[in-house]
Length: 73
Image 1 (cartoon, rainbow, N blue to C red):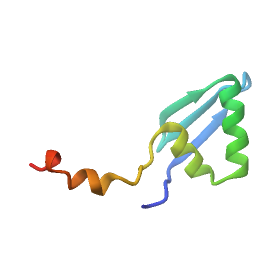
Image 2: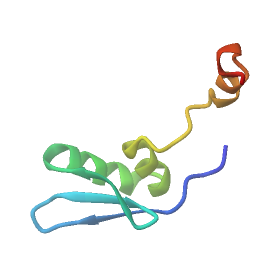
Image 3: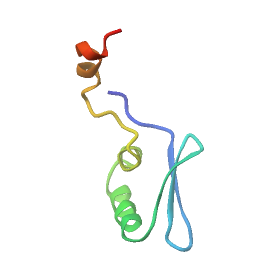
């Protein structure tokens, strides 16, 4: 699975955190969720954390789903 890339975040003076992916807004966090996100970004791989928080990451079952009879054309 390729590593996520292209994510960035900015923190506003009011504590709101905006996450972008390749320049487009991907999520906005406020309050306790924003603080938890910032703590997690500081302690881990920032790109992976942002991908996880926005839901833009692979779950590992894509190959299984692609090969399922229901998904065959």
